[in-house]
Image (cartoon, rainbow, N blue to C red):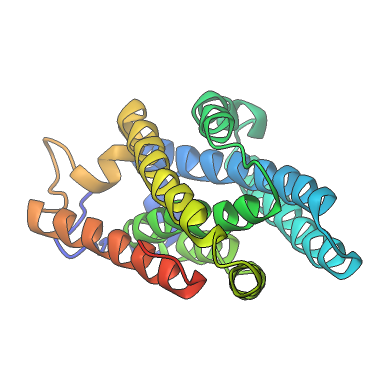
Length: 238
């Protein structure tokens, strides 16, 4: 497979792309990590709903959790279409994702909202960046499952309201947000480093070019800028 420096691919169709074994392996990894991430997101939103202070908050989070599960099913079906066992495709990512969530367990409702918006946002941005290197049909699915389900506006509204009611919580949540971004970036790097096929989508290989260092730097800058913007939208200092 050839990946151009600008991230475009020479494939005219998904079938042509899947004829390359290394690309197919990368796609299975990408859908596998996204599927497990969506499954865990469903579980976490359901848990956050249990901590919600009001019935309307519980209902909103329950609706988002249901949408995350639908995303999981879409990815699971796509993995089956590729002829692989979805459970086997997800298994390599279970430990790193579970460890990330174990290390970033929110202490309360507000920390849960910041994590859903800031921590998950870093991961979502990372996979959106990777979607530029896959075939059009696969890119469409990745972008669909990375779609904002309304959690951004929900988190911003609730966190800003909490800060307005008690400005003292802003400092604690700002520290929490900074911790989350560090953990999220480390987790994304670990996933990419541990899976050769997935990392090869970005760096290329001996028989094909990848993204140059300048573009890698620009991608990291975009991830950082998006994190800063999210923190500011929450009313927190990045």
